[in-house]
Amino acid sequence: MSLPSDQTEKVAIVTGSSTGIGYATSLALARNGFHTYATVRNLGKAKAIEDVAKEEGLPIELMELDVDSDESVNNAIGKIHEKKKRIDVAVNNAGYALVGPLEDLSMEEIRAQFETNLFGALRVMKAVLPTMRENRSGTIVNITSMGGRVAIPLDPAYHGSKFGLEGISESMRYETEPFGIRVIAIEPGNIKSNFWTNLKIGNKASSPDSPYASMIGGLQKAAEKMAQDSLPPDEVAKVILAAVTSEKPLPRYTVGEDAAKTIQASKQMSDLDFQNIMRQRFFGQ
Image (cartoon, rainbow, N blue to C red):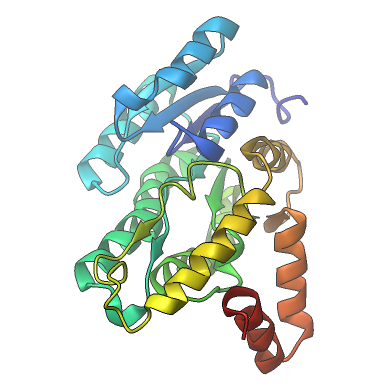
């Protein structure tokens, strides 16, 4: 797949590049001619992508970037702007899922979830927008997940952050379009990555004394089955690459048959009917 229009070297930045979707996306962009800044919070965990980049001679630069920090984000984006004078693609991928009923989650846990999943993406967008606007060109890709359109039980903080990112992305399209900037939402379903192993269960929610303990057990069983039926991260990377190299990309892309079917069912059914199906799926009720 070729680069868009002019042949000037395109520049991309991807957050959360050490594993999963971020890792696969960084490689896909670099293999297709983008000078890619693969950013990670801890450079010590970037050896895998560094080794592949060296072996294949890919235009990948590793960069430390913590989406939870204004200073870290601004420093990283500032260095890219100073060196390249352009940012053509920004992929907001860094994130994790916090599991637990609202009552059992502390405000600190909820704030941390929003800090990474929502405010982290906002920091990156605010940092790259001036450069994109000056160049009157650019694409922002927000990994919102199927969880930005449909909620499953016991993930209120996670879904709140992802629903929020969907809404922000939709609103931003109107304000950035006149400057040639595109905002795309990518909505993966179940993906074979470290997402499942990186799940964080709220401290109180993990206690057997929680009034929601039996529900947590049901969710864990359902999650294990979902993980078995998941797609590799490369499939998401392919969709992202196709979107950012398209002359007329769609506002959002759903990735995975499970995601497509679930979102479609939520549209076609009444809210009550859909809730009953989800209750049966996760709790057998």
